[in-house]
Length: 314
Ligand code: UDP
Ligand code: MG
View (cartoon, rainbow, N blue to C red):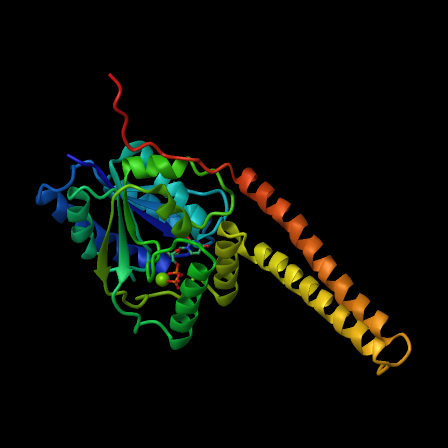
């Protein structure tokens, strides 16, 4: 039977852990009783360098019951890195991993749906929010805008999906092949491939404590997401350069004509012409340099060029 690991990143979550742990334990026990997962399944808390009693709570939970396990990071590395640490630990010990937030905003009852999609042969199951009305208006609109912008920038990203998802062992193996430092899991996971499914759930409100994602972290996250996946901004500079250069040519012709007609002041045509032309050439050159930087940027990521799903060799 499949061993399930619930991976829960925690940063200063002392206020929520006791409640969260009992809810998750109930869920996992029920799945075990239903014979859906192995009795050696675990709830894995990842302490992302918390400054409060988070790790003490995790240790005592582990002492009470072996179903709870923990990983402690040496310092605060951010949600995405904490998640990856947990997923990579799960990869070594489990057949399936499901990641969810410590504040239980992700409805645990969606896990049944995840498992049944997994049993239908999905390697990755995305939890997708059916509604966003528990979010503030600000968070809702910025998030919508972000997803739309990411799509426009050519990043394959699942709408209204945070990091609540199931991944099979081989999907985790695939994830391990991505060696980039700027982690944006929502962008990477769709690149892994394999069959995937979706489960809708209603996202609740954080039941205690406050968001560990202040606006500053959210903005950083968005900028990371865009610049880690797309060189479209660089292309934009190149295109702009070409456009301005072309315009400068047309302008030059225009200036020349008015000059011939004698309708200009001395020096005006040359001055205007050079401003436009030099501006265009500069942007174009910036874009060309940018193209090379874009290539270097893709190379240094050393992303896997492919992930093999199946091999038929005798
Ligand atoms: N988190 C983390 N490291 C951080 C910030 C957040 O591990 O540096 C965890 C946090 O404990 C929670 C999850 O990431 O389990 C999501 O954070 P939060 O609920 O505060 O974000 P929000 O739901 O407000 O977007
Ligand atoms: Mg939350």
